[in-house]
Amino acid sequence: MISNQTLSKIRPIVGPPGTGKTHIKIKKLYKEYLHKYGPERGIVLTHTNVAARELKETITSIEEVKELKKEEEFFEDRICTIHSYTNNNSEMPRNLKVFDKKAYDELCKYYSLFGKTNNVHVRNDPVKKHPFFKFRSNAYGRGLDFKECWIKSENPSRAYDPYDLKMLLAMQENYNKFKEKKYKDFEDMLEYFNNSKQDLLIDFLIIDEAQDCNVPQMLAIERMAKNAKVVVMVGDPNQTIFQFAGANPDFFEKLFAKVKDEDELKEGLRCSKAINSFAKKIIKPIWDFYGYERVWSPTKEEGSVQFLPNLKGSPALKNLINKMRDSNESFLFTYRSAKCKEDWILPFLKREGFKFKHVAHDKNHVNDEELNIHHTWPEFLKGVPKSLKEIKQYHERLNKKYKNNKNWPREGTLINKDYTFQDFVRKGYLSGELKKENSFYKLHKKYKEGAEKNDSYTEKVTYINRIIQKGNLNQKSTIEYGNFHDVKGLTRDNVIVDLSLTRDEDKFDQRRLGFVGLTRGRYDAWILKSKTGKELII
Image (cartoon, rainbow, N blue to C red; front, side):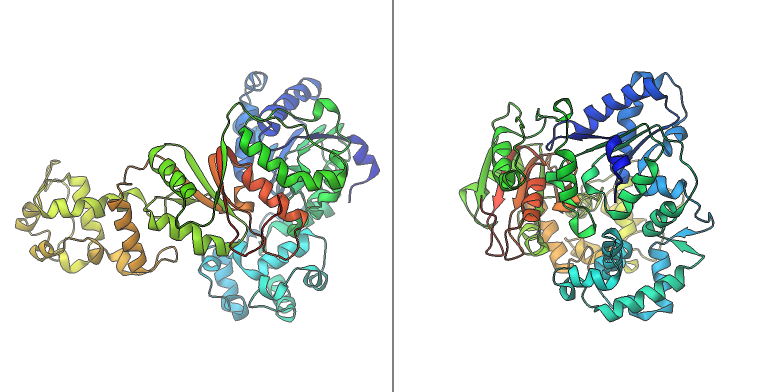
């Protein structure tokens, strides 16, 4: 995968979570190599668009970089994702469109097998969530054909339900026919790049989160490194959690074992003493197996680690709820099993009336505008004057039968002031029948349309009522959820972690996942008692 020639060039940088690998060490390295080689042939790559943006902001904040007075476009192809770089520096035809949801809908018209799953998440994000594309990506990332990948996958019949190997092979053939000479995907970007023959003008190459690289990405790095003077790989083998997609923890354990003392980061800048100590207990069997122990200091914060038997009632749960209500800190619920999310986490957040969102979403499960409408509507009916802006929000969401068949007043008809409900009834814009409807829910056309984000109409209404009743409309804390893979790279004040095992064996990958989840936290952590009946042995 990586030649001895390339291995001899690699400078490994290793550090546990929150030791400043990305924002301190890479910044320092870029400054060093900038003076030595210049900016034109310096490449910094990572795995996600979010991480790439953060890297770009970090590097362009360097005074010496500012002095270059380069346009933003200069760094677009030099500080980016691996996929972006390979896409822009290959011999791939430029007329190919990226395969997306629109293309997926077209694909389903030609080949009905792709639409067999009715999972709502698939419909919203088929390229990531559809079983076929997940299987294809995992096979390609591990350098396996479909048959090999199926054999080596753990319980593939469940993981890629409702498809079996025969179906997946047929779908692969159909998919390739469909996108031929028209579409490209991430796998194509890497394949075209790895098969290209043109020389790349790179003097220094820095790879962040190197432990996440899969087989074709490592082949791409091999090609990039051919003429490079120095190759830096920054990462932490204890955070190798994408084995299913081709990341190889054994390779990175060996690579980072060669790290020089000055390139091993030891000062913790994120985790409290309590989280640091518990995280070391989780990961220690891996350290023992490979014959090392990382020096990794905590911050000055004491912090705490508490245990939750469940999310229905306990002193520890009370502590958590109080902190979520009273502080303006951030809280992250993270887990291995989707069952934990569906059975515990989301029901708990809704029951307690907290506003929350997935880590990948900008908006809360129910956005603040919607909440405000439902909260203020009874006041409006009782005669409390509301601003023209608020009334317009009501009006836009009402079913037509309550609007007296009149659209929103034309520009200039109303002056910008507060109006009462009766004012709008008299003017003929609203029906007097609305006086009977103290709740806005029954009138809201969007909620009438049914489930949003998998909630039924009744569930959504109940949840909104809870937010209002619990006094969480002006909630100061930020509450998010996501699985261990979703949250990697994040930092939050507090974490609530599910350490349930989803398999019989207590394998190292389970420890790495729990380690990643727990070390997102700065201050306090709560450990959920196993939902599966199996837990990590700490």
